[in-house]
Image (cartoon, rainbow over all chains, first blue to last red; front, top):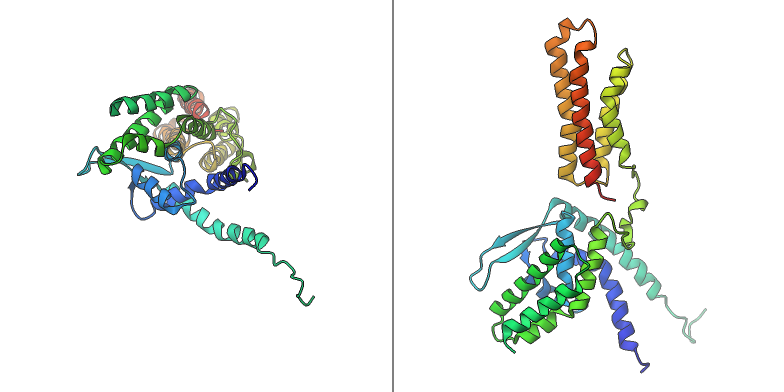
Length: 124
Length: 200
């Protein structure tokens, strides 16, 4: 295998993740507020979106500054109180906008990637 | 090494790497990470703290992400082009001075041109200024509401009240000069505030 192949792949994945991560985080809050560790666990389970967990906190911080999410503290039966993140109206709107945008984007990329290669036996 | 020392070392490393971050942002990041560690340890008591820290990731990577996010949301640092929200690409984007000047000049305009259609234009300035302020990308919703209240609604109410209470006696403009100046000063102050808190 070409050396550095896996690191190239990791970089490509990171580039792809960068654009969509915040919307996936917003989507996780669509039905109910979630706390940080919970959000990270869901991202971890997804596989492709798993990232160095600590880097999600700066993202959450920006979403809060941009008024896309609000936070509230809630007591928990186990351990310290959790900071719960919930969508604001703006966050919900941003998520809906992205939800509408995404299928077209995905289909366009798929269309490029799935160009059928002419096989030798293909009748032209 | 004790568990608490490991955590302290880790947080100190993040703090060091994030030294370029504004102090408030840095403290917030450290608090978020500390909370994460505490919650994770409460939920998975059998997981060693080194594993929890390893999952959180390299302090340098976290600090770099925080700096990038900070630049993204900060008006004063040139942001990376981030998808479709590169500010200059937005349609209908008006320079933030336009609504502020229209709002500020509405009253003086009516004073300089007291005969019709001067006041009508002054009023139009205020309405258009308020609309531009509301549709601008430079302020957040709560700032826009406060701005419109202070620069358009309140002055209109004050002027209307003044005109109603003194309307019958209005044979010359001299008595209206002082209130007009006061209202203009109020609007100018509110616009100065809006100008200072605007975002790029």
